[in-house]
View 1 (cartoon, one colour):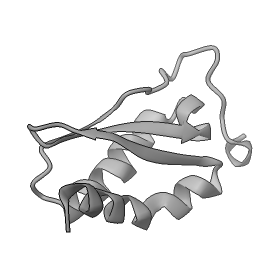
View 2: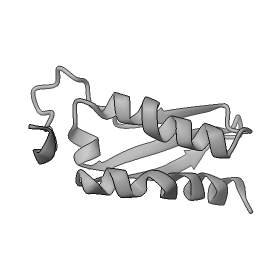
View 3: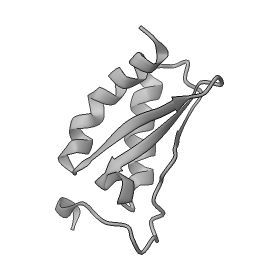
Length: 92
């Protein structure tokens, strides 16, 4: 199984939780240094808690399943103070 397939398999373990809040994640790139670059989709892309989702959920799932990955970065994190940030309906 390729590195990309392993990362996708790890993400598939947490996708139901992301989708429950109207979000998702896509792998944009895995660099030669084995850093996974992700794009947060749907409500995950505009949620002020996206940094927590990335660190506590997505990052841990990938690193646990694919130990050769050296880092995880999101290309579109929303700052918690961003006036355009939107909370998922069930968090209001």
